[in-house]
Length: 176
Image 1 (cartoon, rainbow, N blue to C red):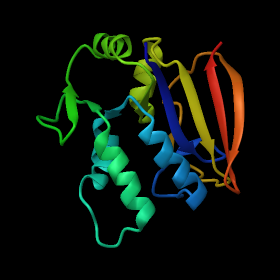
Image 2 (cartoon, rainbow, N blue to C red):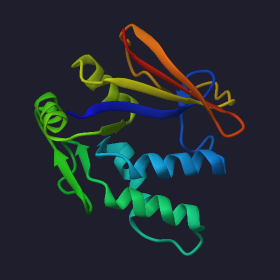
Image 3 (tube, rainbow, N blue to C red):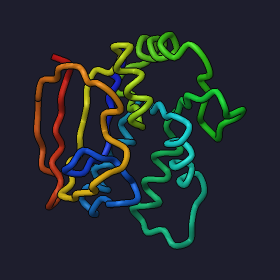
Image 4 (cartoon, one colour):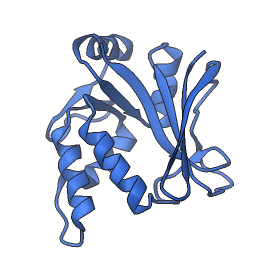
């Protein structure tokens, strides 16, 4: 049975914004290895549209960016959306019955399925489907934006901390 993990970069004041801060080379390599090891990823529409950046090669990319793109393209993706009518390569659309669809994926697959996007993760948290929360805490203060937790969070228990690169701490929590 697969484990559903919500993993995302976060500022010190609790916000997520992929445009406000970027991973250093060590953290980026960590993300490449992470993506390679996933059973798949679940995205909301907005996060999926952001991630589609990796669908096509760009001449300005370095080796690490090409590695990430290859890893991302190879993994199965499920996109939760009622407005999209189609999705890109290696992706499937989930339009209805979110809980049943995710329960089915967890039962069918082994390994880790990552969920990306605070609102989608909030919906899955409400359904009791998120098994683990990984906060990649960056030494940045944004002062506003989209919070990591889109709504009330369940009681959590810290299970591990890791320092990744010079400045980032990964905090791993499970529901208490």
